[in-house]
Image (cartoon, rainbow, N blue to C red):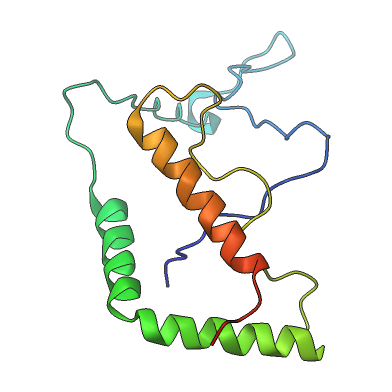
Length: 138
């Protein structure tokens, strides 16, 4: 099933490990080269798409379908969130951390608000954080 939430935010200051994208082209470290029958074929070059190339829309379609299913069942997800909060407050939740929002700024935030959507994103995030801090009214 496709996750509707973002990955947990990293708080460690270690740099992320980077992996090589190209294979080394060493054939032999000695003067003798390998016979033809023992050589491995060259790995295929990685294809970098051009701006006019068609891309696979499968991952985006799956994400949109999962989002549609979640929006069609808002009541069920609200009940699930209430059950999880009740288990967390009772101390029955086994995981160390479960929050509906990840800590920090919302995904996609810009420091300089260039477009109108940046202000809307900031306002929606502040409303969500404020709603989580308020006690249940009903």
